[in-house]
Length: 292
Length: 291
Image 1 (cartoon, chains in turn orange, brown):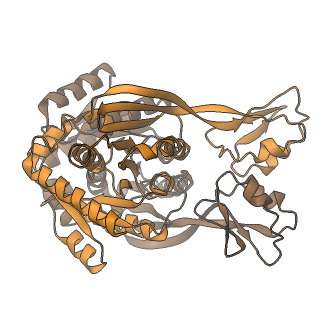
Image 2 (cartoon, rainbow over the protein chains, first blue to last red):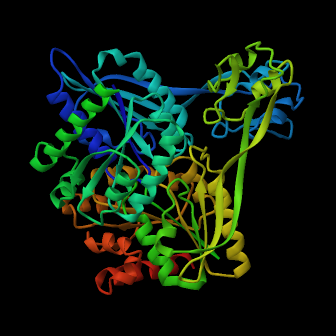
């Protein structure tokens, strides 16, 4: 099964849940060589790796394709700049300037150039590293280069990489970016379930509603985990109840958890209350997946 | 007029709590742009009255009129976004997957594909309960956030700030380092990074700082929840010192931040002690640095 951990609001605990749940599932729900994979798809700010130690087993640079101007073939007909919907090509004087950060790699300019003067070439966007954490736990991290603006193509490429080896894993957990726009949509595409992590504050509630609307628009099966339970108020409980949304876990707010988290530590080894809640979430997950 | 952008790299460090405090402190002499259009929360605290509202269109989306479709399959073959599929024997565009490149529109031999303007969200011009203008937006469900709506919010706010002759344009940006953040940072006079003493916070801080350096922007930092981990707080300060980034304030971890949000208040309205004092000083220092 593939599960994405997402949230509207940033900083609600996506990474905390992703890391601790993966770690727990790898320890308790695998036998006879079964494995869990955690993939950090928050490529702009990947943080899961801070909590994990392992050996690098694979590393690759990730590229996407953008046009490259071949001056020797170009007749300056300007067709490319006229048809590009993203203003990713411009005529400046007698040269064509390409802006890779605006390009969507649609191939239109390249294929429509009558002189074949715009071949598609590789453009670096980041790197992907795979680690072995232990015999039942692998971890993939994708990291966008600073200055590269589009996160979605790297997420797409990372998912292709995961897809190739998905049969090796009993469970795949995807730590997704915050928000509700394209990077999130790419991350949750094709997963069996999305867990929306929220916190019991008005910001948490408002952003949860946006995330719920997005999941419904995408026809995604989803459930909610409330993190930092105990701060703020009960509005999230009530909202979920009124809207028939299943809450599959409530991780208690604890100062010790915040301080262990800040030091890059796994929580379930140190805090029994949190281990208990992660175990509840793991069991609920199995039930949801079995039912569907 | 000075343009000040508040960013964080990592989400949940307290960016909106601090930004909304600046809003309360400066009141009429400021226009605010909530550029976190994915998860715009500023209005929950500043409780604005909407003065003007507009739909925001950005980019295109393909539409196939199946009556004339000859099912030649060329559109499916050229689409690099896998946005076209055959459902019940009809060729259909998935508007969420379509990126509006218009390749299918150009290639269709019977011209049965049209390109429509895409509704990307709504944006609002409002007056907050502090009597300043807030420009904010709501991204459409599952819409593309390439930074265009962010740019629209920022530019609209800037025009109003110029018209109203206020001294400050305050921008609340989204987490991350990608297009929406770059769009919010464009044109900034001063950047404030709100961070926290965790390894995640430090990691994200270093990435976002690299971005502001690349864009050659004057930057300072606020260390929130400073006492949550003294050892890592030390590392964050060491790092900032090495990078010659001044720290405007070190704020304690305090339940009052959450309580204030739950009551719909800014922290400077809720606390009259040390937290208020530190935020006031930070805002004064920002004003000194930009003028």
